[in-house]
Length: 268
Image 1 (cartoon, rainbow, N blue to C red):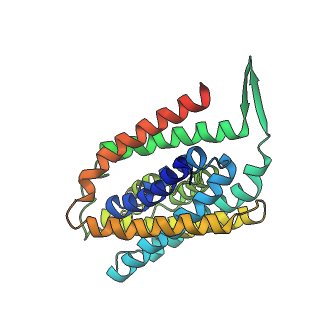
Image 2: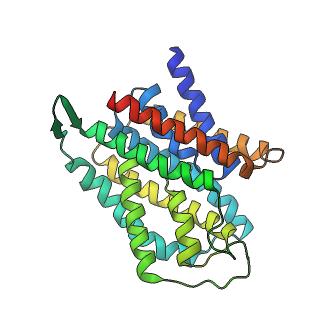
Image 3: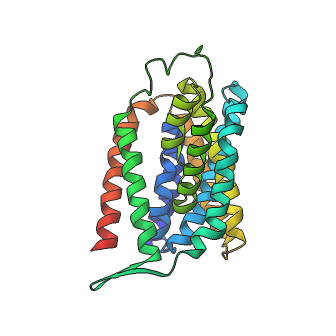
């Protein structure tokens, strides 16, 4: 087997381990692993990522359901516009992007390059959120805070997250969690747990839009996803000895470096 593919499958395992340890962020690695180690086209890679992220988050959501941490009403209010936005983005917006977007001198901005550049910007935002690692709101860890709903902003945020998820294939937890804390006044633990359910269903619905447009290699996708799920259980197991929160900043710096690498790779 090619050594690059070996590193790719190790990357699949690592994605799950990070999700199990940190509780999020691992999905941001999925597209770079698929594109640079397996040579998969960016559009197809974002589709695969939606399936991998969705199924992985679903495992985490089931664990949180058992603990009673998921606020289903908040998930429903946030999810409806997100579900519609991600499906429409994958079904209509992504296929509508022209193969060549612009010509700048000798540089041609193609659809694959544009998607990877946009993905790098999302990685920057995710990295900064993990590096800062600050509680959003003075009482965000108060488990007894009253849940309130800013409906217009929740609907708007859900739509924005749905479009971003549809374009780059990442879960968007770094956007969803602050929104749930600020706009629905959820305690941090419930916000993290509820976001996993939103990410899971939203990503899988987005993938349905791809099934109708793209040719899916189910054997490869199934094996890759299986490795990621195994990694999640490894991460949860190791998390007993290594606190995930302490790893979040370090992983944030790693994601930042990856974002810089993608920019260099696509623009060099």
